[in-house]
Image (cartoon, rainbow, N blue to C red; front, side, top):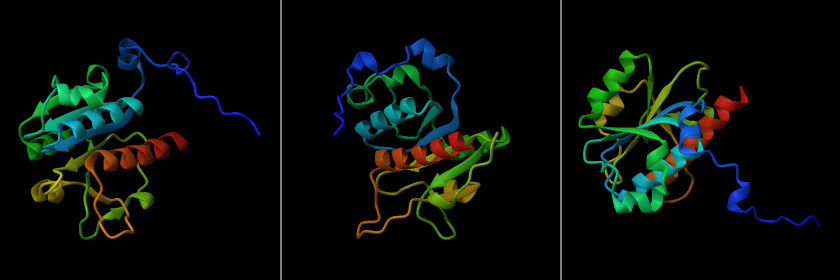
Length: 180
């Protein structure tokens, strides 16, 4: 049986901040709509760094770096991933749509498209919206979205932590963009 030796940090081929900034990005923008947990925000930054996400928008009550509880889970990703705070999520959505960016709300909704069946268009940038831990994505934002994507769930809870949802969706779309 072949041994699987864990890699040392020095073997991981990590990008410097400058290399990350210069790298070609995945055509995804993450929008956090009124996220309460600072640890969730930090985790989203870390996921965004791992998959070369273009930008994160922190909307409404979503906290902004620098903050020790964001930094604790982000592990420096707030320095690599571009981010911006916007007060109003709906205004941001309309502004991005005017730039031909398609808006995907990640939500459980009538007529939602299941994540595994969604096929992103090549040469299209998408903004994916994740909502508040209790209330989800605001209804007016869901209504304005181009597509609503649902993560299929089969247990009794039908609820994933926002940082887990972000990881699932970003990984799925990253794979679909890089397989084509």
